[in-house]
Amino acid sequence: MNIPRLRVAPQKKPLRGRIFVPGDKSISHRAVLLGTLADGVSIIRNWLPAGDTLATLEVVRALGVLIEVDEKETWAWDLRIEGRGLNGLSAPSGPLNCKNAGTSMRLLAGIMAGQAFPVVIDGSEQLRKRPMRRISDPLAQMGALIESQDGRAPLHITPAKLHGINYEMAVASAQVKSAILLAGLYAAGETSVYQPGPARDHTERMLAAMGVPLESDGSWITLPAERPLSLKPLDLTVPGDISSAAFPLVAAAIIPHSEITLVNIGANETRTGLLDMLQAMGAQFSLQNERETGGETAVDLLVRFDELHAADVSGDMVVRGIDEFPIMAVAATQAAGTSTVSDAGELRVKEVDRISVLAGELRKMNVPIDEKEDGFTVHGPLRLHGATVDSHDDHRLAMSLAVAGLAADSPTWIENAQCAHDSFPAFVEAMQSLGANMKWEE
Ligand code: S3P
Image (cartoon, rainbow, N blue to C red; front, side):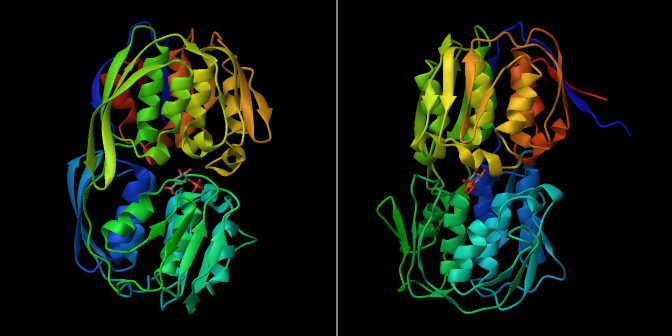
């Protein structure tokens, strides 16, 4: 059987329309993991059934948790999770497979460190290459017994008594912060984590909604020694994922005369770095109908094409938009002047090395990106040429290359683009409904 490639043709007509994007991936992972630990039934609406989050769903089912699914849309499910309480999970019959999902593996490790049974946590070849010491080191300081393969998965975890620690993260990582706080639920005493930048705070918001009295001054987040022994169930509607909205958003910002609306997009301040970057580049967008959903802020995003200019990005903006650099680079190709990204060394340990792989693929389309150890430089505006490019099995790279293809002067083929499904099921259909020239080809 031939593996389909994504064919993208030059976009001569403006993108127009109003679409929903699937639910937030970070919140969807956490809703399942935390709902599992609640005492009682959690109801999660607009949950994201993507490759990564489905891996989390299967993992918690393997731990004995009952989850009923109502498949409202192929890309939006409602879940009913029968929580087992903090100590009610069952030993799985084999290794827990997180597939490509780093968030799943790292958060799960925090929870598994506190269980009374041994487990093995594993994942795909891609996930087995990603660094795990960033969680196994602090968890070991809490007393956890974790054996890794030279700092990589599979992780073998054996039961141990945990105690709280004060831990200063070297880089601002929501996955590390969350793993420590989740292990803290099983630890004697107080657990505190210091974050050197505003890493996404969905775990803290969800734990607060479940009755956990977390304290935070923005830098130190503390789980006090005195806390309830059980977690209240969740009842929430997941907002659309701003990290998925990023692709149609940038497409509309760079394709002449486009105007689109992205409905019900999460606008948590720890996630809106891309909006700040686009604003600095002169993009035209507005946030409308701000409302609360599931303890998070959601908005409708209206985006119009305009000429862009270059911007320099560093510091907190990087932390708040860490997943958006592949698509930000595409925007920078269409901006007048030299755009520079710094302080973004973390990009090298994402699904792939998102600096060198991105630079390598965009070069095929006539984008001479200068790589730096902690970022990159793009000299725009550039005339993009169509080419055959490869996602390297990285969902955000696949979708960024698809948007670059729309701005190119001849057709682009993206090999291994099906991985877009890891975070954005029906990405191609969503783009087609805005009038984008892309389709699967055998
Ligand atoms: C995530 C945190 C980020 C992000 C990832 C999702 C999360 O990773 O890149 O896609 O849901 O906690 P780091 O915590 O490693 O920065």
